Length: 142
Image (cartoon, rainbow, N blue to C red; front, top):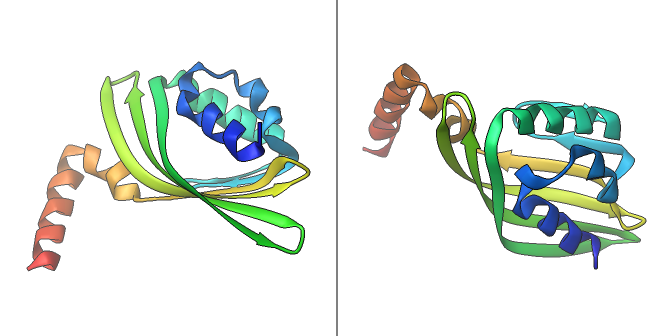
C-alpha cells in the first residue's frame, strides 16, 4: 500500500486510530501545520492528536481527490477532503471542507500542511461571532 493510500485510510476514521501509530505515516522530523498551530517532530504531533482525539466523539475525513506532483526525487500530494467532527463537550457536529499538502520522503510524510476556513471551523460556532460573521458575509456579498 502506498503512503498516500495509508494516509487516506488513516484519516478516514481518525477517531479510531491510536496516535502512537502516526509513525506509520509520518517521519520523526515531521512538520505539521494547520491554521491553528505548527508542530515540529513526531512526539509533538502525537501529543497534539492525543489531545484532539480526547476532545472528540468522532472524527472522519471523506477524501475526494488526491493529486500527485513530483519534482526531482520528492513527491507531494494535494489532498482534497471534507472533515466530519463531533465534539464531545459540548456535543456539536462540525463539517468542514479543506485541503492538505503532504510531501513524502522514503515512503513517509515529512511535511503536512492543512488549509481550511477558521471561521467555518471555530468562529461560526460561537453564537455572537456567528451573527457578526453572517452580517459581514451578507454585506460583502451585496
